Amino acid sequence: MELRFIFLVFCAMTLCMSCSKDEPDEKPEDEKEIVGIEGISFENYPRVDGSTSTNPLNFIIAGKLLGVEYEWVRGALGYDVNFNWSELSGSFIHKIWCSQTHGSIINLIDCIEHIEIDQRDLIIVARKMSADERDYAQEKGISLIETPIALDALDFIVNPQNTVNSLTVKEIQDIYLGNITNWKEVGGADEVIIPFIRNANSGSQEMMNAIVMNNAGMPDWEVSYADELSIYSMFSVYEELLRHPNAICFTPHYYKEFMFRDVFGAYSPKTIAINDILPDKNSIKSQTYPFVAPVYVSIRDDLDKESMAYSLYQWIQTDAGKEAIEESGYVPN
Image 1 (cartoon, rainbow, N blue to C red):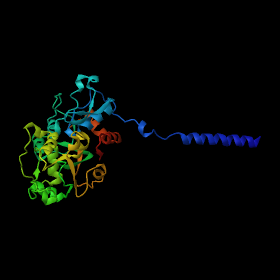
Image 2 (cartoon, one colour):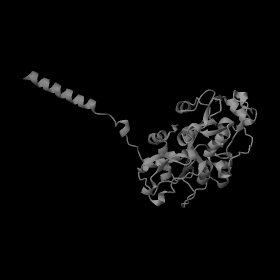
Image 3 (cartoon, helix red, strand yellow):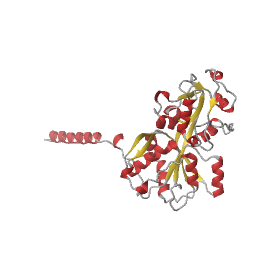
Image 4 (cartoon, helix red, strand yellow):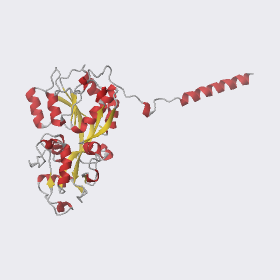
């Protein structure tokens, strides 16, 4: 009788241990819930803005926090993330804006209490303020808090027929300083190099000045785009490279790989390796690619710490925010 009792107790203990062992400690990865912001809604969602290349991230963040379905869609100028706007209230349509880098920074500096479409509470952009923008902020008596949240890179792209596959950092600098003027000097064809640049204060131009040219200055070449407005479009850079087989220009890596993708198919510009290293997720994360640049979330330093915009600013820096950043295609900081 005693042996039978001991045997039953042993079986019960074994069963309990087995049950305890089989019970997962946490939800599987695909069932984990994104931690949100208490009280956030369509009505009180902050007015956000950003550069062309950070627009998908702004929509993914809003989609997760508001429980709205979103998807990558292809438009006339490439891919972007968007909502089904027919399911949203008309008042929400102006909450997420894309004024490009310079425009969004100015909108944040000019932000005031009453709601205006062009004035913003928070922006996600591919760079810090330029010297001109800092001067403007000082004139207004405004300071910005610029916090790095992700990593991007500056790619150098050429016509797909160009036979040059890699350049050194110094060769890139010399091309843009006018010291190297022919592709044969760097192992290519005997053709004059056309080094395109962007307009001042554009995100990619300021990245070029800061991380490639070390703020040493660049010649103010005239950019021969098709019309006055297209100079403000990254898409026009790609068109220009197709029209000029001997040209070279630069672009945010994220824009090229996620937003431009296969728009031109086999005619898409070719990315040049720098010091024999191509930009990709691994070389950007390890920063072995020479031209890696932070992506910033920026707010005004006088932003109310109890506001929903400040809560969003904090949330973007959490693990949940980093999941949204990684889902967008950026490398979390």
